[in-house]
Length: 151
Length: 165
Image (cartoon, rainbow over all chains, first blue to last red):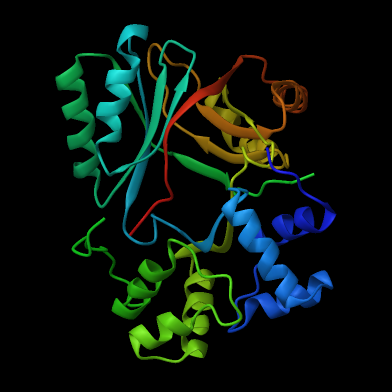
């Protein structure tokens, strides 16, 4: 785990939702933080290098770009978890994939240009593995605002 | 993914230039005084136009936000619980809104039920410890009156990437 001082924490909390969209965004940010731009850039490099900051970029809205996504869960015996997880990951349409202890134990998200494309992947997995699969597309969205409060 | 991936949209807002801007920034901009210079040169437009176009895409919802993705595990936010709730259909709208109001809830969705899966509301809770997550779930349960719920922790991460064009 990374050591963070108060300024690092401030930076991380500020750049998630309030990143200034300007030609010189880090200059503006350093003003807000009351540090020099040079210091800010050095801190960002370190945070990025250590993995605390993965990237600064666009969070693309698949709905608007014409894509469609879903959450899928599959019920796999313990001895098959690694093999099936690997097979799932082979699909580039898989963006997240986790092991969770429940009846349905492998949970992954799929994003693709069309519903047919999603169905094809889900049906392939169902047919190839024979394990029960539930497809859990979003019916209603109440919140998607990943902001981590670094304290 | 390859450049051949077609972005299906009837909306002219997401024209070829905007798609290229997204592709050139989706792995992250550089930490420099002028992070858009290279992209501007490559696309043959000004940095100001790039910034305007990104703002425009934000305003129109093509990008949810432009900002940092945090390595939340690295900073110590290691507990990640998917809380699944069995909410009566007629209460989903009201309960979903209450759950979304909790800071620790990063995502909140309604999803379909199945015969062996009765849980129809999903909230992702991220915090420093599992105890924190359990406490948040308890608070949500008290606030909503929904007592049939389960917390599914991620025991292992097999894959995690952003959604890419």
